[in-house]
Length: 335
Image (cartoon, rainbow, N blue to C red; front, side):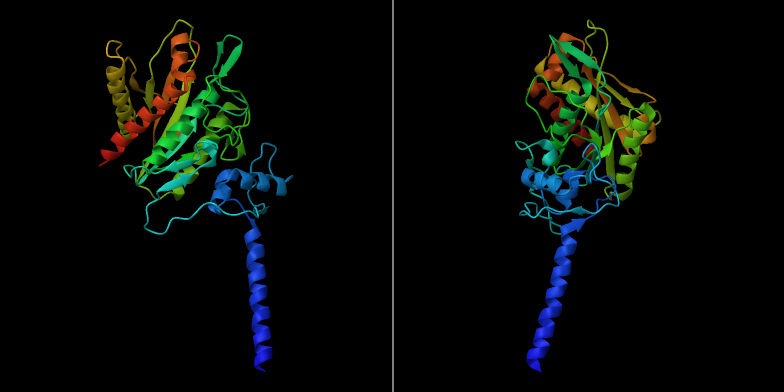
């Protein structure tokens, strides 16, 4: 009798384990998740896991490699590399595959931005390259340089303990230390194809931000939009900072980043002067996205001197670091 009960118990336990394992082999994406963020939710952060995922789910992704809501996807069989933080514990490291193999492991060096949530949006992308500059025979696309700076900014913010959402994504690029960035139309909006129509494209990224802000519990939520200007070749410009009309928090954010740039230019180029300005601008993404936001134009892609601000990798990193410092200043004065 005892042997029979033991057999039944073992049989029942085995069935439960089998069904649990089977359930863990497949999962459905949440709204707004791309492949990397979907896999990271289950602890898969390596390039090998991403490659396996794409292979075992061939034919189930969108044409651009995005996930389809409601569809069940097989999870990788390889070893998990991500760890969930314990409740109440502080993260000491973060893995973000979007940054690329050389930069995906992020050490949290301080907790200055604990409780801050940032939504980072690089301009254009997908079918729209934005402004196009020329350097010899090379075409320089605005969306590639804006994206690289956004990734660098995201990494800098994570190092300070911030929660970061990168809205426009290219899962192949990562942070690049090249002067001339290769062009592609692979970018997605959190895994969703970016529309060609301008209003639809802008509304898509606003919707993505607003869905996330509804779920995020942090009190300090800010959006940063990065663009590169396109003017006549002779027009050298400084960085311009915009906020939505009537947005006190957006104005304060833009002013704090602007003041940081002023200090940095005074330090590194004391005789140059900084002519960047802060002003209201009734831009679609500023009006339609929920969190207070700052919109930055980082220079004229057509001007040779401005291009140095963008094509030299260390300059792109400096731009990201200065924006990060401006956000820290804004966060500390949030009350």
